Amino acid sequence: MASDSQGPATATDYITHHIQNMTYGQLPAGYERADGSILSEAAWTMAHSAQEAKDMGFWAFHLDTLGWSIFLGALFCFCFYRVAKKATIGVPGKWAGLLEMMVEMVNKSVKESFHGESKLIAPLALTIFIWVLLMNTMDLVPVDWLPWLAQKLSGDPHLYFKVVPTTDPNTTFAMSLSVFALIIFYSIKVKGVGGFIGELIFHPFESKNIFVKILLVLPNLLLEGVALLAKPVSLALRLFGNLYAGELIFILIALLGWVQLPAHFVWAVFHILIVILQAFIFMMLTIVYLSMAAEKH
Amino acid sequence: MNFNATILGQTIAFAFFVWFCMKFIWPLLLGMIEEREKRIADGLAAGEKGEQKLLDAEQRLQDAIDEGKQKAAEIISKAQKRGDEIVDEARETAKGESARIKESALSEIEQEKEKARQELKDQVATLAITGAEQILMREVDHSAHNEVLKKISQQL
Image 1: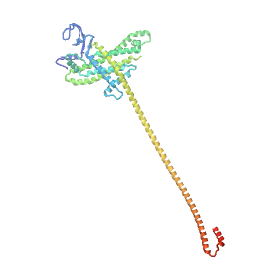
Image 2 (image 1 turned 45 degrees about the vertical axis):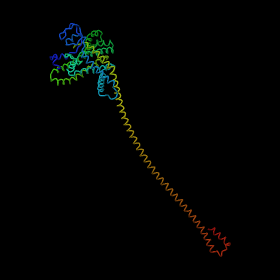
Image 3 (image 1 turned 90 degrees about the vertical axis):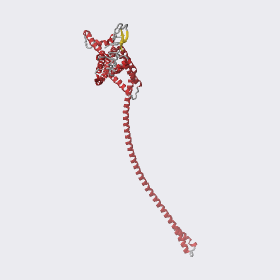
Image 4 (image 1 turned 30 degrees about the vertical axis):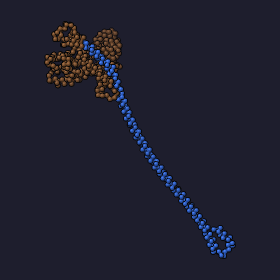
């Protein structure tokens, strides 16, 4: 546990504090704050409780999620750009070799699964893999370190600070919905609007008879629509769920007293698998979905 | 699960990172990797070719050595033959020469013999005449016997 004197009193407080994002948003006039004070007018402010964060509505930002994800994304861009700039055909260094290995792994995966021609798919897959990998890896940093540091630096002992952006559904859904938009874009680009809609309403039940065909439109649309919409939802929830659950277990382990040391180690070792596996699955499924979208039946 | 404007920010960030990767990272890295792959493949192929060439060269070298050995053996045998021939020839020549020398020596000897005999004959005739002269000095009339002496001298 981080700070017993000023910090959360109970285990429940500790857990809820750890799963609350640092939210910045607007509270309406007359709103009763968590500390009992009443706002005289609408104000942009940090949420001091989960309820406040909820009451801020849609126009609020998770500063910790945004900050860490953008920092890690920039780290990805910086590292790879530096290696790409300095890359020579000669013998690569160890660091360059590592990054090139990842690039080749992604390239191989894309070539095996995606048969169309696209300048976007491979860089997209690489970005997803590395970015998600970096964000997931934040889970391996002991749960109290970075929040404690942030609390000390900001001077606010109640500061909410989640360091794993992928435990925020906003992150996973932002990626999966972008992928979803690309799925629809590629479907329409390859098959045309008619082909895309035809795939939705004339499959999986087919008929030669025109009346039966029309009768089957509704059930087909229902099935295909669900299948289509399930893609981004499952993509986002799988990543979010795995990382959120992993994070929660780290938090629970942190409550165990001295037993947390071996327990944390064991779970961290196990979690390394999840960190890499989930990043890989997200990338792989993105490639598969896009190749399905870009293939004519 | 609080959905809020974070999702928009994340989408924009995601799009930016993908764009950056597509523009500045992927083409550079992959182009380089592919070129390196090609270079390595070329290098391996060249290595294999070099090995083949080395084998060929070794084969050729072996052939050349064999050929050289064979030629040398041929030359040696020829030379031996030629040497034998020269020796034979020399022997023949020497034989002929010695015969010729012997011949000429013999004929010279013969000539010398003839000459000596002639000289001897002359000297004997002169001696005989001189002896006869000595003996007959007193009673022989030179003028009366001159004719006889001449005849004898011619007969000799």
